Length: 224
Length: 69
Image 1 (tube, helix red, strand yellow):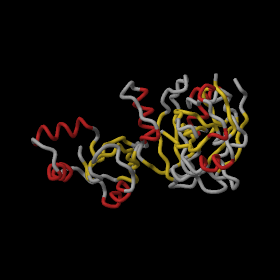
Image 2 (cartoon, chains in turn brown, purple):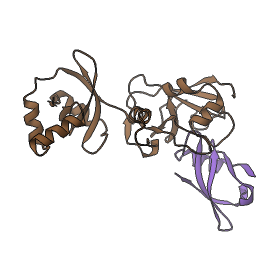
Image 3 (spheres, one colour):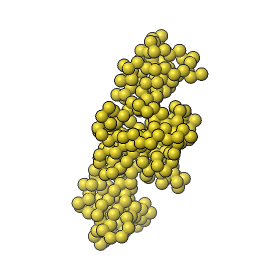
Image 4 (cartoon, chains in turn red, yellow):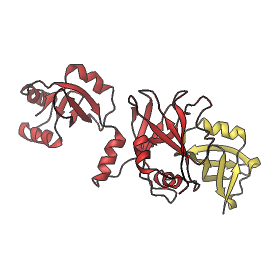
């Protein structure tokens, strides 16, 4: 059933990036029940999926704002607590697991923001990683990965070389833990195969870096 | 054969002001005094340049470094 986005959440959607032109793939948190993945059109209407929108377009002969408005008018008001756009890396990981279109590297991704308590990792063959500033921040344009990706897949320095397709064959065994504040500007993507390495890890670009006191030394991993 | 060259602090400072190409490295083009441009060349940790030995890159004959995607 097509629903209107509650007025108080329209602004929240407008502050989040689009997934495609005019639409966003979102997770809707209902006041009651389980979260639901939906399509938000023009930050105004929610549909359960593209098939619902296609059926509506077929029935009405078009898919205009007025058609969506009419369809949404018939729905009971939704009790929605929050709407969050599915972040690109999460989306491409899911696409990849379904064997869908090739995911994109972070450099080609739209900018998004970190959320509260997000954690990231960076791996280097150099203990004196020059991108980590003297006041324990990150310089603009520095790469990292999500804590989830690192913790699940990187157990040795060579795991990091393979997963993040690093050109330096020396084990990237020095781990840095990054805890940026909420709403730090990032780009998320998937590492492409390169440098004779398979890639496939999540890559994050800290567009403007990360402020002081957000980076600490983590583990020193075994080489292999 | 690949040769590894430590860049001067001037180039390192410049590279640190530029975005990375991936975790811990930058893909760059290097312009030399003799007019040749060598690309792609990898710089690790903004300070160690790796290039084919045959390219003839030496610390003293680098005129310009440009980060490429």
